[in-house]
Each structure stands twice: as structure tokens, then as C-alpha cells.
Length: 542
Image 1 (cartoon, rainbow, N blue to C red):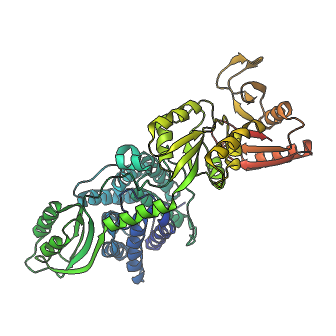
Image 2 (cartoon, rainbow, N blue to C red; image 1 turned 90 degrees about the horizontal axis):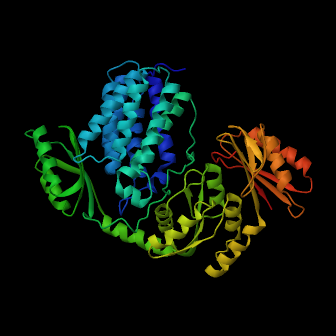
Image 3 (cartoon, helix red, strand yellow; image 1 turned 90 degrees about the vertical axis):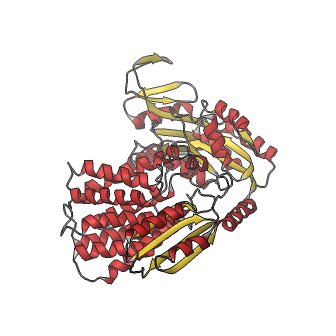
């Protein structure tokens, strides 16, 4: 239990937050949706936080006031790109509250997040919801609520992180460009990872330089942006610089006036700082005019001007060079199953299945982000096949080929049958031909009392099904699974594969595997984590 964060623990949580974000910066970079990544969100946030960490580490004492001040100052000095500057403002507001206390409890932490949110919003000329601003706002609001009943940081932080993750998944619905690109907000993702790092600091967990968080699917979007369909770049030059050694006659009103001038010269305008130094970030077509206006306030330092048009050309050329003829898209639910399909070189996995069928448009959008001319689709559910077939009418520039897989085992068999060197026609034929070689079963529970397939079921009964009928029922998951295999296994089957769901413990699944291997000694029995909801086990017989 940790009720108060002192200067020593504050060092730890800042260090851990920086390290975990740095380890995951490449994944965050991959979520950029601007036609050209503005520097790169993950990289920019990491460099900003590293500057903050370096400034903090220069101070060897344990005065929380000085530590917080150094974190804030370092972040502003090292702020890079839009995301880095906003991160620096979050830390500025956060640390302004922290430095007023000798120790930090959860209520103070929550107030600090609220202050960071307010300053970050004020720093952006035209705040947009669906960005990292939304994520920090919801995290702060959650922190204020949770802190009223939770004083242990080990329980407090996971709850506000969960709030951040929940709102992050909703960012594509708030910002059309995210929805179109098929990603969550990159800056918001970075903030969530930073808070996860802070939690590790509280728990005393070490972070390796290569420690990457496992990435979960977020709704019906993929993990990488479609960089070819995001529109044109209105302002070509990402321009950043500092204004230092400000003139004695310069006032805060002059800084505000400069910000207003820049709003007429571009977008993504950030002008932050005070009479010590000012940080400027603007997307513009006239970087020279930005510099000229800044010279009226003081000296210019550390100028960085990037040609985003050229960067965009390079990205488009790279994508064209990487384009292939054929790709695969699978529909499934469960982290384990998603990873298995990825291991079989399926290009994209769309979340869906029983009770959460994706629409034709969802399938078309997911397929459009695969960089190929022909996409094979594995619906893996009979209720999704028709929507997959209709998706062809909603997509341009590529052809969709629906392999009518009715369950996960058939989808996996189809993916295994794919040969990148074969023709489209050959792959379609080979994939379709293997579907009949797989028998699949599922173990779940009755959601209501009824009579069906000769069984009188009570709500909560464990039931085993083949592709169309209930074959067995009982009260024990392992017994029902074994009974289902008894009723579906034939002499032609030589392999039994179990995929256990999110409600099954690994040790229970391994125990069942051992029992089945002993009972069916002529077969090879394998067991994998599927993580699927609703179904305790998906059974494949081959």
C-alpha cells in the first residue's frame, strides 16, 4: 500500500513513465494519422520526457519543490512537435500543484492532473476532442472521482489508467480522421503508456529498455494508419523554434499578440512560455514570416523547419514499394486468437464474432487499409459471411475474396493454406477446399432455460455444440468438452486442438489437455490461449 508519494517516489514514477513510453515510441509513431507524421508522436513525446528526466537528474537533492520545477522546465526546454509541446504543458500544470506539497496523496495527484489538463487546453489555440487533450481530461476527471474513495496509489492508478484506455478506444468516434485512418489517437496512447509506467514505478517494477506493451485491438480499427487516404497537406512546413533573451520592453501581451498573428499564418499553433523564453510550434507555408515576427520579441534559437510535403512523398513511395498482390483479413474476438492469426501472416484482424458482428462497412474499411490488390476475408462466423460478401460493393481499388469460414478452426486452416507465390485463383481454391477437413466444436453456456435438440436446458448449463446442434450438456466445463469431443471425433482425426477463452484459467486448460492426451493416445493434443469471450473452449478436430 502506498498512500503518499515523497520526493524519492516522485523520481521513480517520472523515470518509469519516461522509460516505458520510450520503449513503446515506435508503436505510438505507427498511429500517426496526419498525412505526414508531425515529427512522429511517440518519438516527440519520448524526447520531450527525456529532456524532463535529464533536467530532474541534474538535481541530486530530495526537495519535491525543486524536483517538480526541474521536471516542468526540462519538458518545456525539450518539447518537440505538437504532442511534445502539449505533454510539456500537462507536466507544467501537474508540477505547479506538486511543488506546493511535501508529499502527494491521491487527492493532490488528482488536483495536479486537473491543473495539467487546464493548462494544456489553454495552450492550444483550437482544442479538438478525440485527441490527447481528451484523454488527459478524462483521466483527470476520473482521478478526482476515484481519489474521494481511494487513498492507495496501487489501486488508484489502475482505475484512472482504465478510464484513459476506455476513452482512448472512443477517440476514432470523436475525430473523423482517426476513424478514416483506422487508429486511436497517438498522443492519447502515449499518455496512457506514460501512466502505466508511473504505476510500475509505484509498484517498484523495473522497466527494460525493450519492454513493449502487448497491443490490444481497439474496436473495429487496425493498428496502423492508412497514409494514402488522408487528404492533402494545407500547410507544408512544420516550424519550431525558441525565443530567448526577450527584449526588456516585451510583455506577456506581446506574446499573446504573437500567437494571434501566427493563427493567421498557419495551424497547429502553439506559443507557450513566459518572459524567460517562449516555445513556438506552427504548421505554415511562410516560415520566414514566423521568424520575422518573433524577432520583434527577442532572439531566435534552435530553429527546426521540416518539409512535410517531401516527407509525405517519401511515405507514399514507400507504401507503393511495399505493396503486394494478395493479403488476408480475419474476423475474430480474443487477444490470443488475434495473435495466432498474426503469426500465420494474416495482415489484419477485425474484432468481431458471436454477439458482435462487424458491418459490411467495417469489413470494407479494414480491407482498404491492407496494402494489396486482392484481400482474402475469413468471416469465421456464418452470421458474418453475407456482410463480408457485401463489402465488395463498398470498396474501390481492390478485390475482396470471401472464403466462407464458419468458425475459427476453419479460418486458421484457410490461413495455413495461403501461398503468397500462388495465383489468386489457386489460393481461393486451396483455401476453400480445406474447410471440409476441419470439424469444429464450441463449449459455452445456456443464456436461458429452454428445450432444444432433445435437451432440457436450465440457464447457466454448460453446453457443447458442433456447427449446428447442441450435442451435450452438463455442469462441468471440462466434462462437457470431453463429451463433445467423444461425440465428434472420428477415426480420420489425428489432431485435437483446444483454444481456451477469457474465462478459463491456464492451469485448468493444461489439465484438460493432459486428460485428453491420455484418453486419445492416437491423437496429438494441443492447447492455446484464445482469449475469446462467451466460449470456454473452441475445439478443432483435424
